[in-house]
Amino acid sequence: MPDQDLLSKLQAENARLVALLESHRIEWRQAPVSLPAALEPSRLSTGEKVALFRRLFRGRTDVYPTRWESKTTGKAGYAPACANEWRAGVCEKPRVKCTDCPNRSFIPLSDAVIYGHLAGEHTVGVYPLLEDDSCYFLAVDFDEAEWRDDARAFVQSCEALGVPAALEISRSGHGAHAWVFFVGRVSARDARRLGTAIISHTCARTRQLQLESYDRLFPNQDTMPKGGFGNLIALPLQKGPRETGCSVFVNAELQPYPDQWAFLAAIRPMDAHDIEPTILRATGGAHPLDVTFIDEEDLATPWKRQNTSNAKLAGPMPKSLGLTLANLIYLEKAQLPQPLANRLIRLAAFQNPEFYKAQAMRISVWDKPRVIGCAENYPKHIALPRGCLGAALSLLRDNGIACVLRDERFGGQPLEVSFMGSLRIDQEVAVSAMLHHDDGVLCAPTAFGKTVVAAAIIARRRVNTLVLVHRTELLKQWQERLQAFLSLDRKAVGTIGGGKARPTGNIDIAVMQSLSRQGEVNALRASNRR
Image 1 (spheres, rainbow, N blue to C red):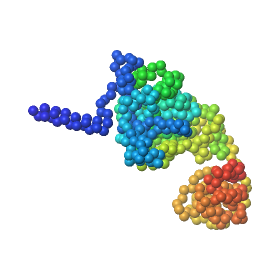
Image 2: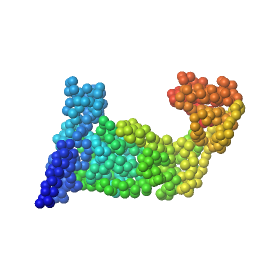
Image 3: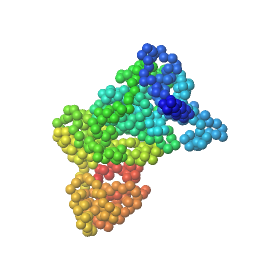
């Protein structure tokens, strides 16, 4: 009977694969999506509560972090639970990290561990990033001064986009976590793209979140770092903080649900096939990160790159807007609707190449922000770098907003100087082009003579000048070139750097680090044209 033989072979193969999965502690049974309707969630047994908890807050099961706290210093943290922890002659903490220890024997996550957490016997967390670069949930951490408003705004965006989100007050009571659960495993990249898109959606429509919010996702990178576990998040509902109203799930008014288990049982996880359509709704087809310069994440499909800086913004816009041009570009917050404020801030934001370099090399991205923002936040103003002026004016023009520009820049002090050299044709072209602009970048190859070109520009501008460099060697090179090509006394070229501060107020060359350390920046700004 060929059919019977085939069935027997398939059953044997199935049994072999099940045994292989279980030997590696890999879950393979499909957990029920919801509790039976006839079962009252508030009357769940202890075992049923633990099963529900483990179904939602799924991460790595071969290892889990447990919280420790020093009795002498009060310092607290998390470390992987290890059977050999502090065993004499075996555990060499803190000299050897757990991830590098050859004697490590991690304790797998079990129902007993989860029960102990819920009962207050210990506090554990979870590593959401699995070894195959997937995850079962996405979490976003809010811990800034205005975390309540930030968390509410994020959850409102989730509701608008149809994303089921659960909001939890953190165990400290000074922050919140927004959780999005998935029906099954999804790639960490897709989960993080979803979180990124929701944050961008929130900033564009509801409230300006900090750009650092992009770094507060769990998991915090797309791929597993070599020798590590990815970032961890503390599990909720630990008995100690729960009794003080912390580590519990709350409603839109940040009030705890009276029955935490009924709330968890009613959560509807998100299907993987809903992620991409949701990202599309949140971004309108733009990149989820929604910053001006997108690079690394779009290299696979560069033809799809979108230019969002000049997009037509939604909602009513002011007829005119005042800009003050000084050391920065200042815009009054009271005049800015949220979509416009968000877009202006993102004109001065870009991806951090160090983050993507570390992620591509599968090393930790800790302390490497994903986005670098150059906008500054003042009580009544948003300030952008002056190099963003052209993009800001284009944005206003594309949205039908008239710009009232007030120039408060200091024009500099007159300087009697002439150029003592001669320029090549290509150098003369560069000088002529630069003189037509108040700011810009000269990009030229090595040996082009950029310092000579700069000396010619100084001579034609005839105002006092501050040159900024980042190394002492460059300071000396600039000093030699300016002394050689400008009709100035050698002592007229001042320097700040290398342990010495000898500014002249005419032409000064400064190492940026020295300016910062010596607090000379404000004084030089007042007397130099930059």
